[in-house]
Image 1 (cartoon, one colour):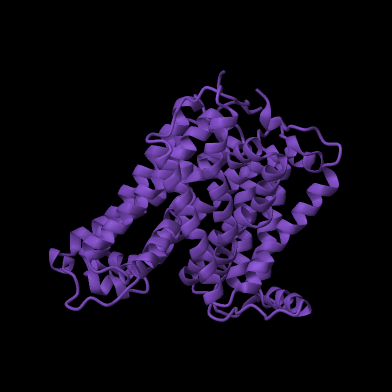
Image 2 (cartoon, one colour):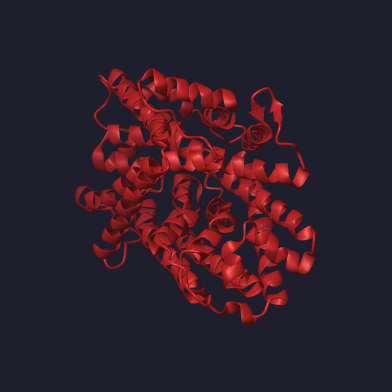
Length: 482
């Protein structure tokens, strides 16, 4: 039996390098600038630091190989939504799509918008005072970023993908500048480990590394728009992960070579310190501009890919049929993009304004729960931390679905098969379990249980919506068309 697929109304207009650009654009956000010093402080020396980054790339490749089999076998819109629906039924697929819309993807869009906004505030020299009432400048600029990028994607699928390509190219050029500055003005003397290695947590270093690699799987959401998906999807996933791993190794090597291992680990703005080697006082501004471009690229990639999930949900579930409407002239899922932007912007207001934080804590208090601890946390950390357990839970279900679908769809042709089956997908599932447990431990360690409840509550609402609207629905969804 041939692979199961569905064609985009706009046609398959994305080539392999467009898909690679989406992967690179989403994955390389702010993590390489924010997490690098923390990782250096938790390893014993320069080679150990590069080792955890290389291991993170290998672990991401394990997941990419699993997704390559799923995405080439079912080259449709929605990625995980399709795999979970086929493996476990309509309810699992619906809950995945609902979680992406109300918790995971929209929170990721908001988090990247906050990163852009935080650095834009620094670059523009804006005051810390509220911009509009209780709305601080970072939240205001984050709202503007989501609105603007969503409008660009509403202008057409080709325009959205070209914007992604431009942002990804600018991002890679900026990272190349860090590599040139680090190796050009640094020295090998800084490569030596500290005289006395401080105790650290390699486990924490790996969690941070894998967070920095996160997002490569979103390429599967746009599989219906990739030309020759039987070849290009698997190639894009593998090439994308390989490019990102190489970039991360080069950039971290430049950090260490330019600043020295000890100084790099203690830096509060590591990329700015490296760029200052060659640019002097302009290094900080160049770094802020680079992070802005990186964050916008990640935000745009998430907006472009994420809307395709809700589009597919709308074709399968009557209650969300309006999300499945495709604009024939613009070639985009208009309502999916609009609703995704609205939810992301609502999240930004909730966690980025005093009014939103007070409202959330008042809601928790009405339930007899302790308020969330907002002190010292920006919108980025809050959105990422509270949505992580939901993300890793569904990631784990997708890994298990590969085993289920090997049995349920044993007669379906698989253009790409995971090598070393079942060990590679088993390793992927083990990684997901480890990170799920680690994300829950972190939430309880920093007293963000209230934020976790806020993130999980929409899932309960989604289950109620499904039960109330699925009576009399067909037994199988469009995801099972052959």
